[in-house]
Structures are given as C-alpha cells and as structure tokens.
Length: 239
Image (cartoon, rainbow, N blue to C red; front, side):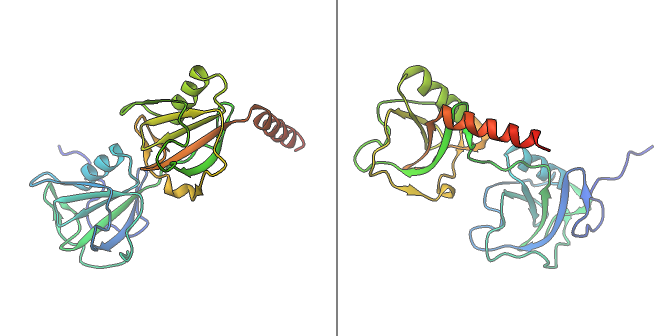
C-alpha cells in the first residue's frame, strides 16, 4: 500500500495552493539571483517541499527551485526578473514526479502565512522614531551600550536602556546586534528612510535592528502612548 501522492506532483498552475504555499509561476534567472536571500544545492534529494522547508526555516517568504537541484529563497523577486515564463519542466532530482524549474528558470512559491519583519511602532513605553545615520567620528547614542550577536531584539535593547540608564530617553539598535542608549538625540541627527534600516535582529528575525552605520531609534514617550491607547479604546467603545 502506498501513501498519498506528493503535494506538488505534476505541473502546478499559478495560484495553486498546498498548505500555506502558493505557486507563483516560472521566473527567469537574472544577474545577482532572482531570489537572492539564501540557497543550497542538493545532488540527489531536492524536492519542492524540502526547498520550501529550508526557506521557511531561514525566515523567507519565497522559495524557488532551479535546474532540478538548486533551492533559492528571498522576500522579493529581483528586478528585472518576471513570472509567467516557460521551461520550468525539469523533474526534481529527489522526486521525479515534481517539477523543479529548469536551466535559468525557477519554479517560485510564496508562503502566504509568512509574517514580514517590521519596525515595531512601539515597545513598552518607547515609540519608534525612525532610522538615523550613525554620527561621524562618534556615536549618535553613546552613553551606554551592549552587543549580543545571538539574542538582540528591540525589546531587549529597550529593557536594557530602561534598567541601565534611568534617564535613558533614547534606545537605538544598530547592525542587528548592537544596542545604544542616551538621554538626548543630537539636533544634527540625520533621519533616513526606515527601509534603510533593513538588518534583522540577531535574536528576533521578525524585527529590524538598524544596519551598518544606521540605527533604529526608539524614544521613551509614556504619556503619548498612554493617550494613544486611551483614544483607541474610546474609539472602539463608540461602535
């Protein structure tokens, strides 16, 4: 007696679902990789499911299989790659009932249950201020700091600043793992697009923690956040 057929047996069509994964289509490979987040190759055991599992474990929404044996992951498709191509017709080398892209072509799947990383609007009594450039020749927030290459998060940085610097009005996270605190933010601080602070926290892959030379900055604003919460509660009670 045999078990159920593989989830992606045969030729999938765009929009087809299995669990939380949706088939997006056949994408062309481009310079720098169509899916440039992570990847691996398997000489004899690649399947659609194994690639999806790898990408999910590495915190990516998209999984793509190329040339029957190569798995790639990302959260977006690199331009100028497009879906809707043909030639995703090579059997997976780990399951010849499934298709795993082709030469220069990727079978692309999207995990619809994926929660994209974000800059939390508030953490405790700290409100997000934006992404700021590190100070030239010094530190933007240099009073107190610590680094943690495995467990840094916005929450842990805010808690550190609150407990180690009672007047620490500002908390900033840089380079995924560095936490800085200060009582003031220099007036010359340069605000940039929040999308520039795009490194994931070393201890929480659902949050951003600055980038090289850039800090995600949070400010202690208990009254503002309390009033905002009160307004939201009153608004909801009105309906």
